Image (cartoon, rainbow, N blue to C red; front, top):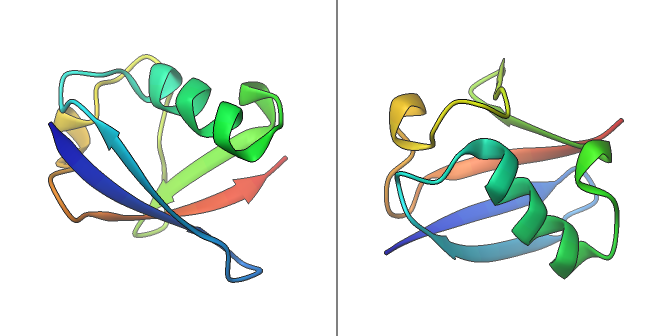
Length: 73
């Protein structure tokens, strides 16, 4: 189990627990529940790279304590 830090441009910060094997799309579903929005409206970036839904977090080298940027489309 890892804990990922997610923050948006308005200063809202979330800590989300997940597994490195989880797909980005599944991670967005967990975020959507916490943010009360649709998973399709969430865009996640790591260092300017937009994360695709079908790829796992581990493939993007998202580990415990990794920071992701949250944007809304």
